[in-house]
Image (cartoon, rainbow, N blue to C red; front, top):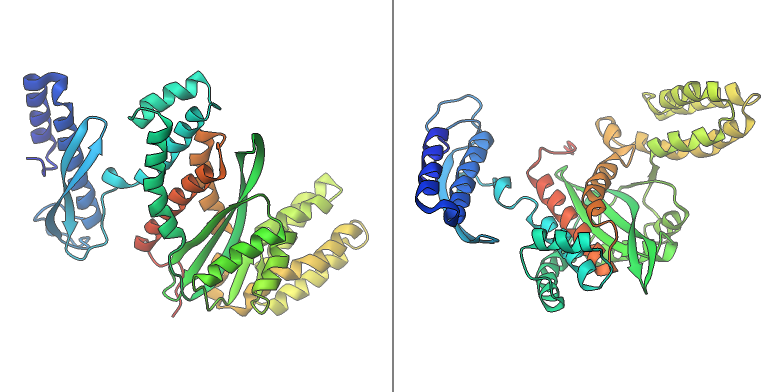
Length: 386
């Protein structure tokens, strides 16, 4: 019964339990609902229900694996659906567990360290499901930190493309709230799949912090980098030139497009400038891009002289992508893949609002990134490297 996805049978079972045990049977109800949800997930993954013949079928069901999960309503003995070829794990069971635990711990730490309000304390009691004491928070944090540290220090290997970016989070350091930089690296390997390679929380994006971060990637075995994609931050530029001096650099075209607008002094020219820069970046070759750039610089030389000088000096830094396979250009010309990652980080960190220390910030961000990276391994190939 626990393995069925039949809605009518599931409803009958739930109603029967409620009639017999009332709310004392909430744990068993949760077990039944979770088991049913996982079966539905498997059917969606397979593209077919049990024994169904379908041209859309991508694999076959392969029984169940027992798993015990600790919850606020007690211990649940679940049956996790399996598939023959592997690669499936039900999101309804564990997707987000690491980031949820990290978020709960961040809020709990705020409470324990006395930096939260009564509202945060109330949220903690409802959200965490455990007594909020310093020792219990420490034990829970240590358990999760071990998993996350192993992931952050895992050996790397050859990655053709390296994308770098940073965002800022509010962190309490020495009783003062400051904006700390979260440095993130994403790589594309020889099979064309993405991975989050590393993350670090630092005081800023100064060269010293970027340099230490890039060195840590090398120490973990990062090799084979053919192209670095990033924005033009002075600290990152200096660190990149020091640690990976011979690797070509692609400056993010999206950020170049934004930066150009700061040099446009007439409002009615903004759309025209944006369209001209897009045409340059969308050129079919570097030769064509350089030709269009020359024409565009000439076009604005008189009416927007500072813009013209800026474009002549900076836009060629967005042309490096032209020396790589044309089918890769769309993915490699911007840091958009990391922009989407940063949005997911922000979605989780804005709940915590303020981190009580660097460790708490690193914990939550690492958990989110680890889940994103795990999801990418089952996604379709990001780039065709053949």
